[in-house]
Image 1 (cartoon, helix red, strand yellow):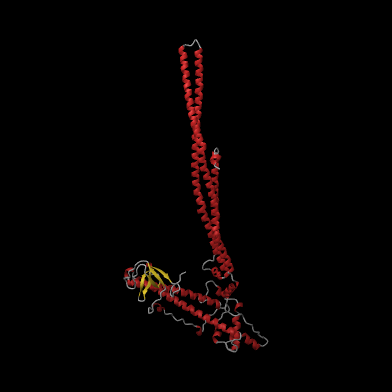
Image 2 (tube, one colour):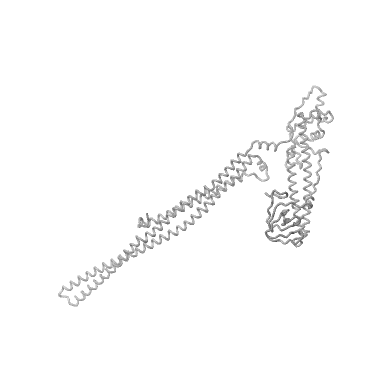
Length: 560
């Protein structure tokens, strides 16, 4: 099955067919390109959707994502972002493996097609030229034969006429001979050209055209195969991301299964628990007895001077009715929240104070690390004046030290408030146990009565504090960290990348490739403290060693 033998006379149709094949390939390229644009647009819309519903940082909405249902929703949003990424991968792979590749192949295909058909037209023009030469020699031979025949007839006529002179007859005879010779020459030329044309025609239809059409057939078959391969690639690109998309969907299912309604209910309790007990029974006041009514009307004001049972009931009635009394409007004004969070119920106040203490401790640790780094850098400058001026760090060191003192004062203040709240909560818990019968017959401690008296109707506390509730916070001695009596433990190892000559005091020389112990990390000054043996340790530039820390070692920091 060869186009050269079967379609030898269909040059124009083959030219149209091959052009149609290129058009089909370009149409497929356009289809894939539009698919990639759709995938990119879909991925962008998914990412925007995921981003739209992400919780805003440092907002109340972010706090809501502590619930398991909200965490599952957040996980779904993150997985949808990864899901969108897979559609971007589809677009990128289709562009690189199909669109770009086929576009380059189409250009090569057009060039090859143009070359093959140009060669075919050249062969056509050659055979047409040979045909024209043959026709021209044939017409000349025919004309010369007719002229020779007429000359022969004229000679025979002159030779038969007795009135014609001998000279005229001789002239006619010579003319006839010349025409006969010309006819013979034309015959020979026509025969030669005919034989040449037959050879050219045989080569054209049996050699040139079959070869050219065979190339065109191979070109067209390669185009068909290439298009089929591209369609397979089209499917494979989709199939390659199916496992990852499946993992995204599995993670969404896993997140949905992790939702714990009991845990969410407990979080609601932790978020809104006030720490108060429900209101007790309201006493019956008998207004039929004036003396009793008078006692009842003044029970709240005179409760301190009466017996202990009356004091307990009056205090209970006042302290337990707070959920039903309208809160102070001043406490609801914007920006009117007290520094000690005294406007909050005890449990919520405790959480806020604990969070504030933790934040202050983190800031203190950060400032202390900065102070240590500046101190170490100053020591390095003192030992190596060429590296910098030690006096230039005094201002910064003083500023950091002052910040540490301010933060410590703030931390002590909030720790005192926290201890006060925790003491009240503990006292209230003991009161509940006493009311339940665990301490029947024992009078309530005076400290608890004072705490009840300081409760406001909205669950807050007044500024009045008893001497027993004041907590003294002892200052921590931070100089212990500079105690070098005991050798520092190794927190990892390091390998020297280059040779370092430790000529200054406090440094240590290392050789390239040497392995040593790390006893102190780089605090930001560019130096790492290492040890070779028990009595040989010092600092080397951090850039000269490759550090491998043991995360389980004491003193090693874990970075996230």
